[in-house]
Image 1: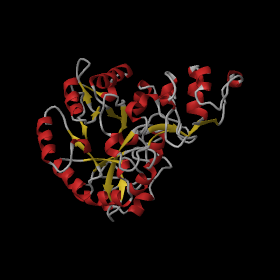
Image 2 (image 1 turned 45 degrees about the vertical axis):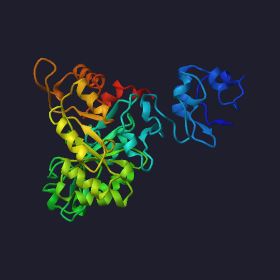
Image 3 (image 1 turned 120 degrees about the vertical axis):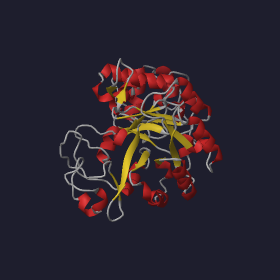
Image 4 (image 1 turned 60 degrees about the horizontal axis):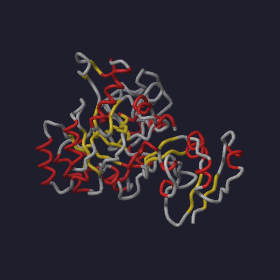
Length: 376
């Protein structure tokens, strides 16, 4: 029924292990050669291929612990064991993680269930030394250590182009100066991006169009519009590129969410929902033209309670918890950047344990190590 082809074995001692095994039978090699080191190296490093008339995981035909490891093709080396119910969307290939959402499945990706995995939302794309915020090269670096959602900031230039840029001026993050809204795209693209330590890089300011094209098959971009008066233009770009399944649209309020939905009902909506406004927002959603399953929640910048996350999960809503600014869980208020590594780790663990589904943070790599993504 199945044809299992071992593409490349670069594991010491594997030939010896397989010498008495019929590799034409899909289950036999795995029943015989069970060491976890073998599984990790073959499945996630060298690759193997499962061919059939249907897309079927090895997890459906063999026992644990190997049942969590399968590949759909030699190019898709996944899913990642930590991916839970999102294992059909999350994987690893070419030394990089990816989130690949098929057409019309973006709402399914953000549908909470009991096996929903712990996720990372890399703030401004996961910027770090040498990799400036809101740069495609930074996104690529982030995906080398985690299958992360990428939060990006979007602004409109003087000539109506859309670029990735957080500030209203060019001063902090580029080699230029002046207001973005008063500078043309050509002038901006002649500049170089600057990292968070002030180092000039070789990277350029990307357009939204280029970022969306890059994101296809790689990840989901969470769009935070900084030029909200022109959100219709951003919806048009998404629609023209058929990029609905690469986007989570962060909305400013319910009126904007309704307007975006009216322009393109296939766009997934990010709403701000916290313990203070939850009841009101739920009532508004029930009266809105979209359903709960078309929504995910940003729950503020300080951890919420387990009971609060449960109320979101009861509606199938994924909770994206921001961890920015001051935190007061360690004997006084302190900015998260000033906490020790141990305190930040404790904070991240607390959010996941209480029920937060994704942490939006500037500390994407430490969170990836907490979630053991770095092992694969």
